[in-house]
Every structure is written in C-alpha cells, then in structure tokens.
Amino acid sequence: MRSLAALVLLVAVVVLSLVAIGLREAISDPIARRIEIVASALPAGTPPYRVALLSDIHFGNRAMDSSRLEGIVASINAARPDLVVIVGDFVNGHNGKLETRPQDLVKPLAGLKARDGVVATPGNHDHWTDRARIEAALAEAGIATLANRAVRRGPLLILGIDDGYTHHADIAGTIASAKGLGGIPVAVSHSPDIAPSLPSAVATMLAGHTHCGQVVLPGIGSLAPLFGYHVYNPHYQCGVVHDPGRTVVVTAGLGSGSIPLRIGAPPDWWLVTFRAPDAPLP
Image (cartoon, rainbow, N blue to C red; front, side, top):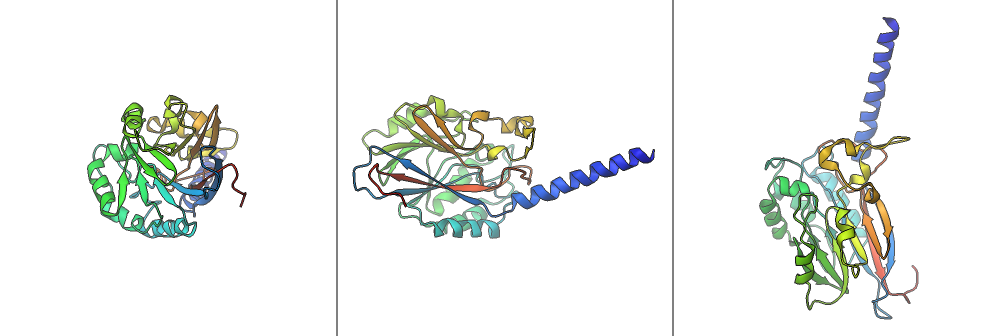
C-alpha cells in the first residue's frame, strides 16, 4: 500500500512539473528565427526583401493576451520587415463560438509596421468560429485577408491560399487570380500539407498550423497526432523543409491552441529574407 501511494505521489509530481514547464514555455517570448532564400529571378542589384512570418496567435487562449501580443508586435517591428504575413488561427474556439472579441485581438495587431503592410490567410480555428467577424476586424486594422487570392507586394507575388485542413484551399483559383500581377510566387497558407499540390513554379511556401508538435517528448516525439484536429503530415512538422525544387518554412506559431502548454516546441516567428544571387551576405 505504501509503495502504491508513493507511486501515485511520484506520478502526480511528474505531471504537475510537466504542466508547469509547459505553461512557462507557452508564454515565453517567441524565438525570432531567420532564413535567407536566394531568389534567382530577382534582378541584380535588387535590395533584400524581408517578410515576417507569424501564425497561430490563438487569442483567447490562456497563453495569449493583449499584453503578451503587444510585446510580440514590438519585437517584430524592431526587425523592420518589408511585409508581415500572418497565416491563420487568429483565435481559439470551435462550433461557431468565439472565446474572445475579434476587436481585442486586432488592437495589438494594428501596431504592426511594415512598408508593404500586413496580409493574412484564414486558419482552421477561424473557420470553426466566425471567420466573417474576424476578417472584418482585421480589415479595420488595415490587414488584408487573402482567401484564395493573390496580391503583389514588392518583388513577390503572394499567393494567399485558404486553409487546406478544413478543405477551403483552392490552389487553381488562387493561381488564376494572379494573372498579370508578375513577381516571384510565394505561397502562404495555414497548413503546410498542400505544398506537394503547388505548381512547380512556386519555389517557396510559408505556413504554420503544426505548432511544431506543441508537446514533443524525448524518445517519443510529438503528442499532437493523438488529437484528431491537430493532424498534419509529420514531414512538415517544423522549421525549414527542403522538398525537391521548393523550400517550405513552417513556424511554430505564437499561441498554443486549446491546451495552453508547450514542451520542446517553443513559440517562434520567422524573418524570411529574399535576396538576389549577387546580393552580399549580411
């Protein structure tokens, strides 16, 4: 009996310790990661073009409030990106129920500063709650939502593809909307799983959704596949993935979804710099 009580106590201590570690990591300052992509189509002498990639804010979750988001916005502004791209899951919730007011979310996001503005794509949680209200609030903050629509920003052709996880992606329609815009095509979408379906001319994709596994234990890996609504192709779980002819950048995101814990998968955002082949390294 004593040994059983000791075992129960040990398990309780381990679980509580993991929860404490997970909550601390979930609310930690996001890591600013960087990658340079050489774009051969950029004319010689073109200055580098910097894109800040954000995802999975999940405002309304206990790991994300206005104060934390304001601090994150300040760190992104300090990097002086030319363009900010937010690839979905602005909020948290299911079954059409928002856990927060979209206006509370966009107030900090309205402080984002980039020469060519801020664009966004919807995520699965945005579709599961109230996408129309979210997009209306984003528009008030000057953030354009691209749902199967392309826009030109600087030297880039931004292909904003709707969320593939909820079956809203229309790659062909997005490509058709890009006719006549010119620029180097860059696909941006919430889930990275659509990458293999992109045309070969699209050599770069920016995505989120996976939370980099969110809870990743040594010797076990990510526990995310245990939760059906977080299923994704493990090939695209995290970071920079080099497919034949294409680079896919997957951010861990800023928030934490339905469970406000992260272990072994800290929050992050990416500064993706596109440069001409002749541009000097920084």
